[in-house]
Amino acid sequence: MPPCQAAGCDRKKVLETGAVMPQVTLIGYRGVGKTSVAEQLAATLGCGWCDCDVELERRCGRTIADIITQDGEAAFRDAEEQLLSELLAGFDGVVATGGGVVVRDANRQRLAAEGRPVVWLQADAATIRRRLAADPSTVSRRPGLTTANPLDEVAAVLAARDPLYTSVADLTVDTAAEPVAAVVERIAAWLTAREAA
Image (tube, rainbow, N blue to C red; front, side):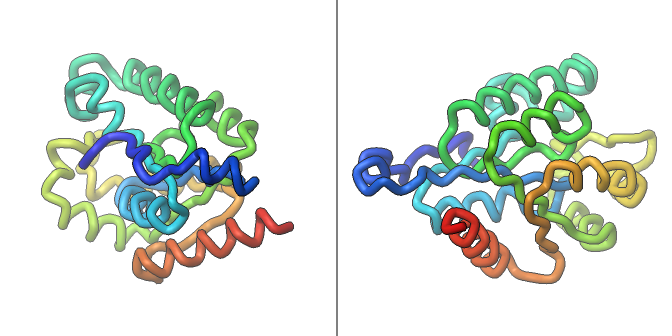
């Protein structure tokens, strides 16, 4: 999976037509489809996209699991906060954040203050567990967030994070109920209506 993809953003055309460069941030727990939705949404909007976890791994030269194991979660969250700050300030396109980006108050404040639409992609715990179990990279790339097995901890972590996601979300979309294409269509329509308002 490539890091930030700016290809497809035609800034000159956008500036000539007076259109607004598409900017949207996707939040949500791991396994809800942020990367898949970001890639397809960016194609629909004609802009770039960035998966924060992939970009962070590229910059650090290690998986997130390795960063946390070797440097600790605080160091990982520091790097995540710095990357989010850079992307929100200077990246035109769709940003798919890491699932825990909302854990830090500074990140929630930044998400709320930047003026970019924030879309919370959500799914029920059973759907997330099924998706994580089917992803062969879950064990090597996705560290456990508690002392429980990553598949067993989903419900507890979701319950703790739901109020944090809610506090910054402008739109909530259930990805368990719809395929990626339908989720993308729904977000794109909402963005169009929001811009027209």
